[in-house]
Amino acid sequence: MNYVKIAFFSLVISFTACVSWVFAKSPFNDMPQGVYAVDLSHASVVWKVSHLGLSNYVARFADFDATIDYDSSDITKSTVTAKINPMSIQTAYPNAKEKDFNNILATDKNWFNAAEFASINFVSTSIEMTAEKTAVMQGNLTFLGLSKTVSLDVIFNGAMLKQPFSGEPTMGFSATTTIKRTDWGMDKYVPNIGDEVEVMIEGEFVKTDG
Image (cartoon, rainbow, N blue to C red; front, top):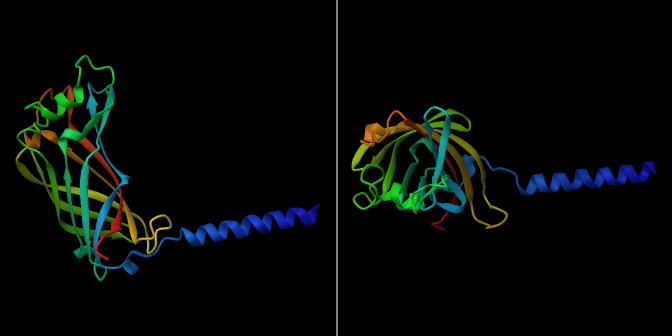
């Protein structure tokens, strides 16, 4: 019986070691230089805002694009660009009295006004490493026709020279920021609907230029 247990645990240890090797994270400095595009199957842009100070109202954008022009010799010289389609809002408001609350929120001139401003754009201007896998990224956010500087806290989750499912070099990040929507002129229902909006971003980026 003891021999069976020893064999079983040896098998478990061997299997775990194998999985750990396959999914091992490569150092970011070993990743090839070039352009990486977001994999929308493994990415999200979620935001939340206070409702009467009682709860946080949560929504997301389903349609967006982002790229990283990655400098492997100096990560801080990399650049990030992103574009969000405001018409792709998906709210957590299934019982709204309005027939299509998502569309109202996207198109109303007091909210995202997508007919006049068809995209929300971000372009990074600097990246400062704060630890081995954390950074602060500054950039310009263009929203409702206004461009203002925002700061994002970034976590470098991991990188793989050969992602096991796609076979391509892939890196993954998490990022958060908090903005005041009134800075971009969106002041409807403040303060009952909060001014501060917390944005949470997840993304895997796949090398696209060979």
